[in-house]
Length: 346
Image (cartoon, rainbow, N blue to C red):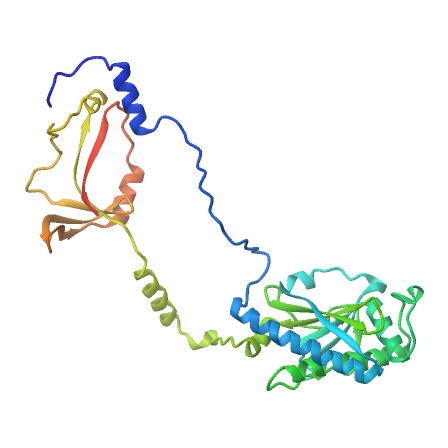
């Protein structure tokens, strides 16, 4: 090494070294914009499919308005208040509110095996039944129990809503159940099953206040509406799945470093290094270099050239698992010397 090594580091040398390695922490002001993602909510449909779902719900709203106008002989405005996705647990674990529980009418292509339902809150049930009778509801009537006649009328209205959904759903003929039920959710669901909740706002044209009802349909039942196709799990064997995972893993980019060798220097020697100084490495020129992947040596090779660039010719392989175990069991030594690795390239 050029120059004479001093026994003591000058304050200037120490300051230069600390500046080079970064002795002070700096605040990272970089801001990364990310879309909020709620893991408690399902994301069954992508943005394009959600757009098609909106088109479907608008068709449903128009059809429901026509059904109400026909039944009640008056004009109605029906809007989609919201379209949201939920896990079934959210409804299965919801406690029943006794007398204030909703009225339910299930529907499906088979009445004995429903695939969805319409949920009608008590206040809405009173309003709809009263409007069908040609009367006007009052605040005192809000939430009261329906009479047998009113419940029969509510069945007619709810069935008309189901018909509106069926008319908007191509190639499906949904049949409403034979009776309205109240209390427990009358739909067999699995805890992690994804459901779509469509909230309808129904308002009579000459009134200011609107009533709400909800359509609850498993997301998978709406796949034809949004153009989503899925293949059954049993179409894929374990071998097919393993191959697909392996093919995907093989496409992942991994950084590979070619390391010539390393050496150990005293702290004082590092500070006094200058241009044209020569460092002796811990390998001879007839020893192979190492190829390191994610901190583990997995290959050996020799320096070479290809297309005018430095290259490495692979000559051997080393089991990274065994090397990792050796690293975990080895005890680190404590000294004041610093290790210097010379990197040939990546």
